[in-house]
Image (cartoon, rainbow, N blue to C red; front, top):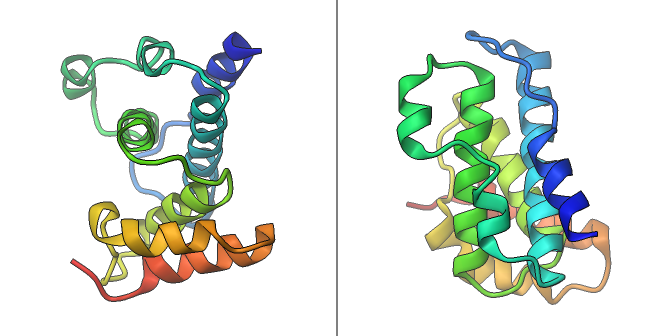
Length: 148
């Protein structure tokens, strides 16, 4: 089961595009949501961080590649793994919803993205909500709130 989760993480859609249009942004942000979800589920299920990181290109490898959505996704996957394993356990809906919303805002060139370290306390409160929809709405609101 653990190997299946890592395999899913590394085979998410990785279409390369240089100038994201609306559909490209949606595809990329959905892939980020899926990667975050799989990482949270894997961590909560006891999968070691190294299992994820070993399947993502190193920072050195990524810096050599041209800017494409595949590269952006791989960079985000690496950040996701590092954030998920650094901080407390998150519900499988909270962190992924936050990451997807940040992605949409970043590529829509909207301002006021609340960066993860500054969003952590509020995301922890989202974790305590009772249903999936409320958790996802809460996390999206955190990403959209004014922050550093």
